[in-house]
Length: 616
Image 1 (cartoon, one colour):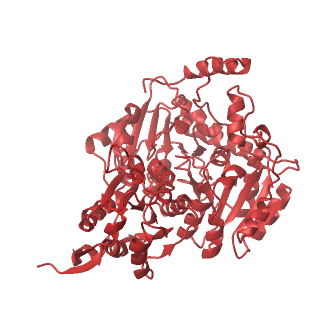
Image 2 (cartoon, rainbow, N blue to C red):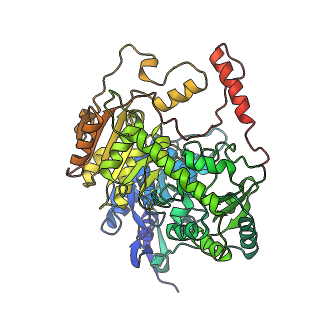
Image 3 (tube, rainbow, N blue to C red):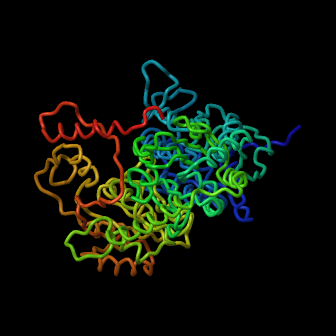
């Protein structure tokens, strides 16, 4: 008979998490970097007690908000290229549903996190308990059902032994390169405290190594034949390149074939920006160098990208009449999008075998040289828009230039929402894989500071620079306190344009009146004069305000020597953005309006829609 150990379900869960390991660069490390927890009824007596018993092996971190603590866990996983990740637990009710936004973020971005929300009583005897959501027609529903559409795997643990198959399935999803995403195990609060005789084998150490599927021979032959016939091939590198840690193989592929490449938001930093064949950002927020080639490309090798509308310019960017897209992706769902020729494989393995299949072939020299010239021209333009000036309200681009000059290309820059993703995608010069950390899949306002904390936990010895606007800061800033508590120094650059400047510009571009975005255009009695630096100081950080780009550079230099998180605030122009580069984006404009500006915008919109490749 197999040996057993009697534990509560919560104790078994905690012990199992401790036993999961991985290997990185020859070092065996715990897969779980820790558990983020805000305790309440529904998890404090069960899982909370269990976490205390393993606190020396599995650290527990306390966040200030359930959503932001989950963002920190996600930032940790992304910065670790999905090789390590974290769990997040909450009470039932509002504590649980606060994490749903983070679950959606992880789902869209294919990032691993284990959600462990408390749930109602499986026995149902005390129903309705405090914070219980009651469905009049379904007694099995709880607030945690909100996690179902934003989880790769969902299970409700209503008996203590159910944790055995549920955790095994959870680990398969969290570590699988194709299925990777959030897992939710909803923990009924009475079951957390119930005991069961668990087999000791359940707690045996297991090492999880990423699966690297190789390409199918026939798909590889089709891809190689298609590329050999190409006159104007282009590579689009997505986040899958980084998660596969395929940057070295991508560099070899580009050098061997002479094919120029460009990067999505998720794929930026796949190659150093200084690489002459790296055209940098592509799509709506792309560079002129990249988008010019994309419009002409006859074969697009899309590596590890889900081909989101910002990448494809709402499918109006790739204009060649006869073109082929090769979808090199570990996930078949992505590999075959828009009738792509699928090449289902790990990015690193697929690139290596594709390079071998193309041995001796190169893209036309004129095409490669054309790309190099376009990159050089873009670098001149980027230097111009990021140069320091003495204007009263600098642009986002000028702030980016200052951060780049002081912090350098080796620092990790992190952002999520507003106007900064577009400017950073175009203008930031990433120096190494993972040094550009953009959450633009879900574009989640409020991710920035918490995600930056998670990235710093993954890379404690590196500079992590968080860039965000005042809108995101006001939404979710509480993990500044946590960064100070944990001794994890961040440099936070807060661009204050007094409102939602990015959406205000989009509003204007679609013919609408300035309305409800900038603070001055919202319903108000008195406009607030918010002292963000004082607010940051009140949370334990060093808070300072810079009155110019020169002062910003001085404060950034000081921040690197500070002993704790620094928040540098600078006021910026809400209307200024980099006009060079970019591409049309499909944002529907009303067909009928009393405003002539809207009607004019609709005519332009209808014209632009003709560019979309509907058949693709």
